Length: 281
Length: 174
Image 1 (cartoon, helix red, strand yellow):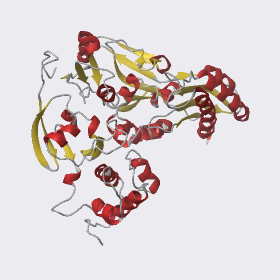
Image 2 (image 1 turned 90 degrees about the horizontal axis):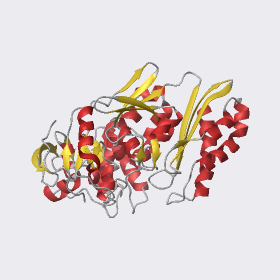
Image 3 (image 1 turned 30 degrees about the horizontal axis):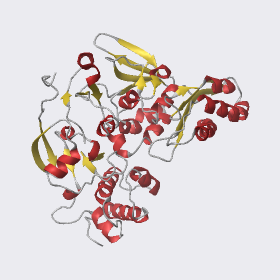
Image 4 (image 1 turned 120 degrees about the vertical axis):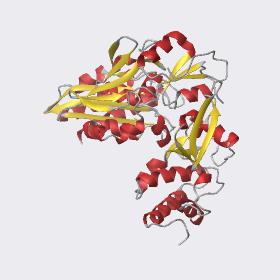
């Protein structure tokens, strides 16, 4: 059961930001509600007010200057079925196709998913690998955060208390671009997720690898990237096992219901190898 | 801003109107009321079930504008201006929907607790994809859990209904 709360329904980002400033920790942004309402029903968090942001105009998927701009209120369903995303970033379309279940995808938003920062979530990991930027706005200003700096800890982001995530901007890979996201889990949520993106032009370049779900927040693993960067495809494939082992150790995996630390580290390695090979195919 | 801001402890009533199984409903809801409670407790339609309560099992599935949602985790005010379908609204003029008929003919349920959600989710699938592959069906339906059947007969039921619907059948046994 939910406890009683009040609802605010602002029309503009500046109004949302003002409400956040005014009510502080007693208010929370409500978008799809797929994660927030569960936490509230469990009594893990309580708010006197929810700020329904669905009237804000940030739901478009557009191409601007070689980058894909995704409105934070886009639902997983809209993203999995978006023609533009299927064409420009098939790895993201596939990820969205496999988020939770059809009912969650129907109402859950990408922005809500990122801001809630539940560790066992998919999109953040791939967005880090893709070098995405998060656009955060408040009443009078706007700033851009690198996806890899956005996630601070479990359920904690780098957003300021009165900032609103409005857009996610992802550079569209060129013809040599490769990317993939793979996850594994046996519960409703993934135990481990691995995302990667690189260019293949005779050799591997701009290699980016991110690991999620295993630890408190998705993170990039430069140690593993270095083993593949600048290598020929064959050399990179030979180094995959070592890169996977490094990525596993760097994942800050924790033992929980989703698996032991050792197990998750092992799975990171397996997924990294498979993700690299699937990105090549 | 849409609403005046008053003290958080006071009840806030939101007047909503929506279509429920084809009929206009006008009620006042508080922001924290869940769609499942409104439909079951206030409007007396108990087909949708509360089971996991965390959007995992699908027993509370309702269709909002034709798309499946978990009524256990949907705030009731969200259906304002929209169309809600529950299992009670699926048969037309006393005639079962092809999915309902197929579940009977193919033994698609045992205890029946998951069945309303199962059938509504399947309807959403077939409305957007009248000829799904078994893989597409399984992917779409994987969030609807059945603890009795082992799913084989559910899949057979949905496939049979799809065939009936493609051939223009209205649910009678052929």
